[in-house]
Amino acid sequence: MGNALEFTDANFKTEVLDSKVPVVVDFSATWCGPCQQLAPVIDELAKEYAGSVKIGKVDTEHSPESASTYDIASIPTVLFFRGGKRVDSVVGLQPKSVYKSKIDALKGK
Image (cartoon, rainbow, N blue to C red; front, top):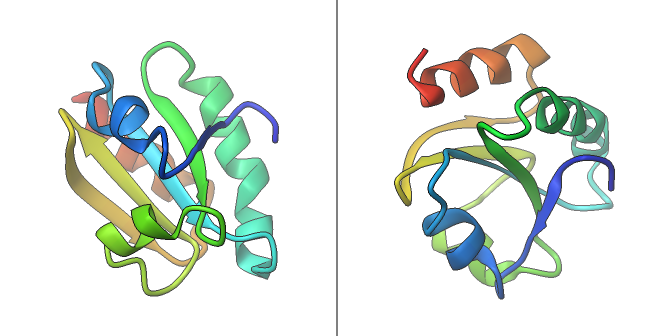
């Protein structure tokens, strides 16, 4: 899975909502083409922001509860959390720069 963490229905609260650092969550599925294109970008971002932002993926097939909670209607959808609250989102495949600017804003740069 690379550098990104794996978030599931079981660990979503502790890993994402209770996190002391900002969190980026990529909602995706293995059968989704654009999700597979985004996967290496998410892994790169996880490596670049290691230690300051937690970045991971939720497989919507295996963790439908989390996807349902945040009304994920299309994938990939990337949600940005700070202090346990959803503060931003990106729907669909976007250039890496879009995610970087959102993460920098999330960190308060």
